[in-house]
Length: 115
Image (cartoon, rainbow, N blue to C red):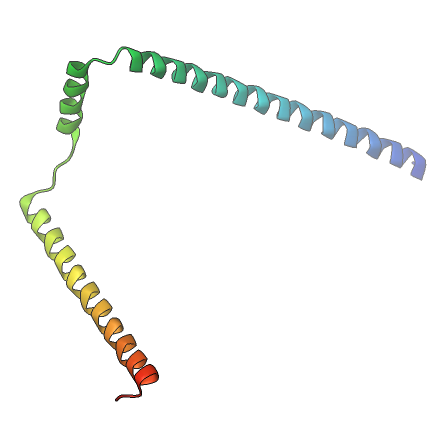
């Protein structure tokens, strides 16, 4: 039969094993994060060097390449979105106008006593 003291020792050993396993996992994740940080720092250094070697012609060529990759909307879709924006704008303007009118009427009634 296992006594309570031996159970306590076994639990203590298991806890130590779990802690050491967790510490190893933390250490591994720390190492991975350190590698990522070093990679980011290297990329920052490369970006600084790129800024020093800035060439306007290459910059504009890259702009043209990026613009070619954009998916431009069709005229039908563009028109539909334009209509939605205009309707939203009109509704918002009416809402602001009505709330402003309500507050103007309330302030006139409260402060000037007129109906």
